[in-house]
Amino acid sequence: MHFPGMPAPLARVVEMFSTLPGVGPKTAMRLGLNLLTRPAGDAAALATALQLLHEQVGFCECCGCFAEQGHCHFCDDPLRDAATLCVVEQPVDVLMMERGHGYRGCYHVLLGRLSPVDGIGPEQLRFVALDRRLAAGGIDEMILATSATVDGEATAHYLANRYRDAGITVSRISRGVPEGGELEYLDEHTLSRAVDQRVAWQRRTGV
Image (cartoon, rainbow, N blue to C red; front, top):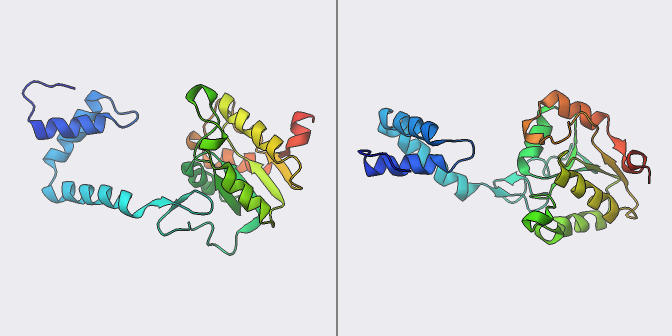
């Protein structure tokens, strides 16, 4: 990105903003100019927040959700129903599920979804960690809450077949989630209703 006459430090900031999803050149420039007109302390606070983001935030060793110290808030909550496990694609999906206040079980984050075109197979996702959790026992139901995209549905089918004989109930969130829909962009009421109206995988697919 090149803007004649723009000082190099400002151009670097604009270029960095433009690498973010959904941020075009004009928006990146507005953000950079806004930071420039703010007090220097605001820019310093933003820089510190970004530094701490990578230093202090990681992924839960158990479920794969966002965590600050090994385990996340959800895995450490003794009031959650450990017998119900909701499988999602990304940590942000957990945050969206929680907005509905209707689900009180635990989570497992795959950190992606199967996509042969992109070279993402079972080895690239957190299936082995899920195997270990199921093998440890105590889980009665696994809710498949992958997105309603083609790859999300393929991932759900793979999970259902992988754990067909695991001795647990496998269910799928209901069609309150539209075809092609990402959980990240759904409102909390739709998600809550989808979880409440989930159906057993066998009944849903007729197998």
